[in-house]
Length: 459
Image 1 (cartoon, rainbow, N blue to C red):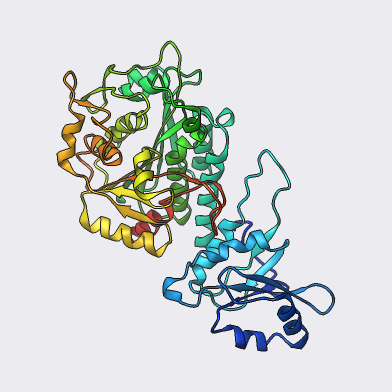
Image 2: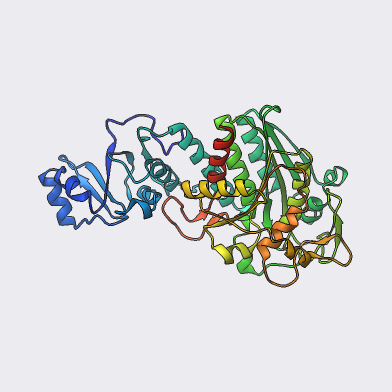
């Protein structure tokens, strides 16, 4: 069980009462005269996000009041994620139901996250007794997955290069008795991964393709491909410092794929799982790949480099081609790919692409239900001509400044032909500011929604 959840101590746990404008009079009446007087004197009002600690008879805390929206239909079910930042250390329990008790409990756990690798003691030991009627084991595995991704993304590149990302994958494989191997450095050329090699060859730390497999081969094939660019300078098309500042998060797709893999393996879903992570650092040196270079790909298509800062789609292309050779039932790729996605939908809503209408509908539904917001974007075929090259089969970028996220998706689609269904997510992987259940910093996006979809399909 994740430490955010208490496995025992229900009897001694401090009660959290969720209050709304309509429920407050009844809850207030049940507090007792001294507690009512204290709460009234403190000026507590049952507004969304309001908080009050109710003192006990001997100076301790008897209960906590936390305000929710009155209208459940429009309420934010993740609002209880604020609580770990408000509460003193201790063990707590929900005394009554939230609008969505399962999501409230998950939000509480996710809100308790602190990245303390380099600065100890900036967190409090706050935990929640899982509410009755929720699957505590499932909440725990989801929280573990999300926090794994957050830790990996938050770790600076000096401690999270391709080798360290490989080691994190190895540890996860060891935990779940999965098989793992990697193709490294110049071996990438011998094994026909020329695009991964081209992007990563300039760095002092060798590039690699990490390959994890788990599950019964007789089960449906589910393959995850995560962009593992551990730092992105932009290459010779160098980013300005403001755009380079957060590039430790450019391996957020790989971190998210590992988070999702943990959820799948821990639940023991009956799938034949494969995880592919092209792990590179896009650096500048004498051996860096150049604008207008042309490279072959594993698929056989030649690619002209229109911009070295569009490197993520190049490494994903080779990994997707390998994944596609297995004809998976479901092929999913995730990457921090385009600023255009953020211009269109901001940092929280994640665009996804697929030709499978039924899959898209289900994906949207699960995103809404899990409060893991997604939005389907079109694979608009007429835009493919924007990637035309005069010297190669395709360019890695489009002409002009329009439709950047769609162009990226259309580029990746060229490398998928055998998979029965394909999903592409253009994630951000970062919370610019703290929100309930989403502390500022690295974030695991789309994984909870995809996990819910896989549980529905294969659980």
